Structures are given as C-alpha cells and as structure tokens.
Amino acid sequence: MIPAKAAGTLAANRRTGSRAMPRIAIAMLSHEGNSFTPVATDLAAFRSATFAIGEAEARAAFQGSESEIGGALEFLAAHPGWRADFLRMAQAGPAGPVPRDSYEAIMGGILPALSATRYDAVYLALHGAMLIEDEPRGDLETLRRVRAAIGPEVMLGASFDLHGNMDPEIAALLDFAAGYKTHPHVDQRPTALRVLGVLARCVAEGLRPKGAIAPMGAILPSINMRTAEGPMAELEAFAAGLEAAEPDLLDASVFGGFTYGDTPSAGATAMVWHASDARRAQAMAAALAGQMRARRDRFFIHLPTPAEGIAQVLAAGRFPVAVTDPGDNAGSGGIGDTPGLLRALLDADVTVPTVFAYITDGGLVERARQVGIGGDMSGTLCGRLTDAYGPPIPFEGSVLALTDGKFRNTGPMMRGVESNFGPTALLSLAGTPGGANVRVIVTSHSRSPHDPGLLALHGIALDEVKLLCVKAKNHFRAAFAPLLADIVDVDAPGPAALDIAAFRFRHAPRHLYPLAE
Image (cartoon, rainbow, N blue to C red; front, side, top):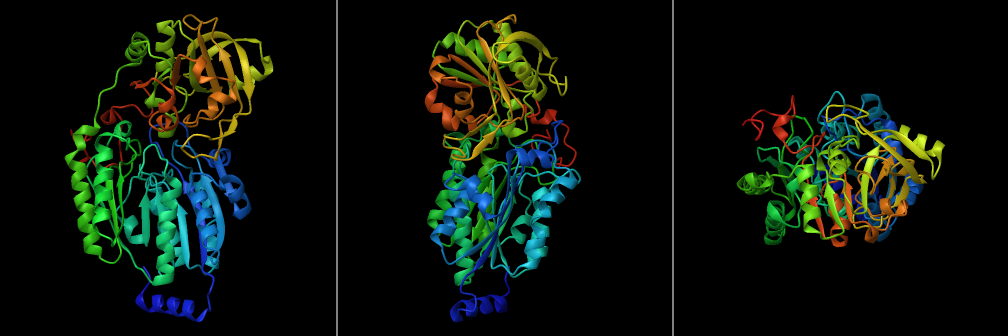
C-alpha cells in the first residue's frame, strides 16, 4: 500500500504536471498446476501456447480478443495519457508444476524491468493456481517478488481465474484484485478492465482499497462450478448483490479453487475489496465464504461411467450429442492419453457417425505424416505416458487429414486468441473392432478443445456428426451447448477424475473437506 505521504506526493506531481503521463507495467504469468499429472509445464509448454514479449507481440497476439491482455490494450486505447510497458505475456495450458529454471526464465523478463523503472502501477494477469516444482504456492511467490521489486509505493493490481487457490496473504501484497465471474470463463477482458479501472483511480485520485480473502474450508469438484446454474450461480448472484448494495465495495469474487492443485492454500475462497475499510472487507469476505459453506454439499455430484453415458445418449436418439470425459480434460491438467472413454466407445460398436476429440500423441502424428493422407496405419492409442488409467488400445485405420493444429478461436471463450494443438492428424478407425464409424483427432499438444475451430480445422461439420466424444469439461459448453442436443459428462479414470479423496494430497490442509472425511 502507498503511505499517505507518498500518495500526496504522487497527487501533487499529477497536479503540477511533473508526471503528466502515468506509466504502467503489464505482464502475464498464467498457469493452472495439476499435482497429479505426469507432464510438467516447462518453458517449451509456454512457448507453444502463449509467449509474447513487448507491445508489438502483445498486440499481434491479443488485439481485439476476449482476453485479459486484450482488455489491457482496450484500456490503453481509452486512456491515451498512459504509457505502458508490456514485459512478458506467458500462459501455458494446465499441467504439472513449472520447473524452477523455466519459472526463473520467465520472471527474468519481468523483475529486472520492474526494479529498474519507476512505474505508477503494475498490472499482472495471473491464475491463482500456479505450481512451481519446489513451491506449491506459485502465485504467492510471484507477488512477493514483484512487490519486493517495485516497493510499497507502486500500485499493484492483478486478475485471477475463478479456479485460483487463493492464499490470504495475496490480499496484503496487492492494492486491488478481481476474479473471473463466469465459468466457462467468458469475462477475462472485463475482469482486466475492472482491475485497470481501479488502478487508474488509485493513481489519479489517491484511492487506497483494502482487501481480504476468506477460506471456506473445502476442496470442491470443478465439474459443478458452472455459473449459469446451480450453487455457483447462486454465489455469484449473492456477490453481485453485495456490490450493488454498497457503492464502496469495489469487487466481490468467488473462487471455487482448483481441485487438483496440492498446495497449502488449496480450496475454495471468497475475496472482497472495499474502497477504504479493511474491517468491512474482512466481514464481507467472511459472509461470502459462509454462503459457500452453506452450499458445499451441492457441489458434489455423481456422474455415469463412460459405458453408461454412451448408452444413455444413444438410447435417447437426440443428435448431435456430446459425451465428455472431464477426468482427462486438458483444462484441468489432463494429458489426452487416458483410454477409458475411447475403450467404452469401441465396446459400444456405435452405428452413428462419431468423432473422438482427442488423443495427444506427437509420435503418432509424425507417423501419420509419413504415411500421408489415405495411407493405412496401425498401432496403439492412449496409455502412452502411463498405464495407471488403463492399458493402450490397439487400432487399425487410415489417415483422413493432416493439419498444423493452429486456428483462432471463434467461440465466446478467448475469442480471437490463437489455439495451437501442434501438428495433428484425423484418423479413421474403420479397421478396429467397434471403430467402423469412428474418427479420432490426434494432436501433438494437449489443449482445451473448447472451440469449434478444432473440428473445422479437420474438415468436420458438426451437423454431419451424431456423437462427439471429447476430453473436455465446462469450458466446452460455452461454444458447443447451443449447437448440441445434449451434453453428458462421465466419470473415467484420469488425472482430473471426480473422486477428490482418492488423490494423494501432501500439502493441502487435512482438515479440508472431503480430505477430512
């Protein structure tokens, strides 16, 4: 926080024009860490997803997009009196912890600039559930080091994912923060604009917000955290009501937490920021956390097995329809390698046109490229990284399409941002028992398949597909729910499976529900 004397000096500088153009540093370091996946998130994972340096690269990647950096660019367009330095914009798909050397490489593009330059404000696009290999509270370490670099006087604001595992100390390091209010996350740009708008008031008006983070005492399954209905919708409505009732309440955010992050700050939390009153912020954060506790048990649901889910949608006969495998969802740290859903699909011997999206196996894609379109292939699918979730599945088929795996999202989530699945192949499994009507997309990178662009890239028209089996969870619904007759989630073994207590947590407090049961 800025001391009163320093705040007065800054305000005087504004009035006299000695610093007529406020200066802000902008950086992104966003990673959702799954403690139970065998795949680490190294620097190459960031570079293959999002890695931009400087304003020109930031504009090329994010201009006009529904993203936090897109929001930052919009803020600057609306505030031409501000100067901005874009440092590092690094984001990787959810996976295992970030190796220490990869983390330091990214921070090496952020901290020196913050130490060497006099900024009025710093904006960070974070996640809240980053894991570093030797520090399970990655975002907390980042904020400690950024605050040490800029000192206590510079305004520091951050935006967070709704699934952040928010340590209470975070509120003491920041001058303002806000979390996404939607899941699927279609409000990343507005969230950035909210944070930047308050930072602008801090610089121009001397506003000094006070924040508080209150844990609710449970690790919640994210499968039932959609904000369109259910307990999370009620909590978001309650938080919005708090904001509407008290003008000095600048933000009330509900964090469902990231289920699969084993950290001392694991679990759901509530965060509230008040314009000036720390006690009021604490009281309202506690009240919001109490509302979360009152709904705790409603977050825990039952899902059918893959075989049951496939049988259910085929019996209903309403097409096109999707069956999703949240347990291997890339957006939760899935690896694109678990065989449960594909095994059930082949056992069902479906008679309708079916697409399986997707399996991650860069070696298999390379083999498909060598064979070429129309060439025959055989081998195994899934179970390449580990057989902990089931053995590999033998297949015989042919190559239908090959792509570079890149497209720009057209759906409501991250619209305009490039997705990069790496080189991909579309295979027919016609020679595989049960695969006569099955096509499978094979990718080089495990990414969230939430956008229809992945299908379009492979020449797949959804109206020609009856059954879509996809390794996805809630983000998938943002674009696909209006296009499908139904979406059925199933519970299959994987690094993001439904049974939280079955995972071996080492750092999470043992008193958290359901670990304590």
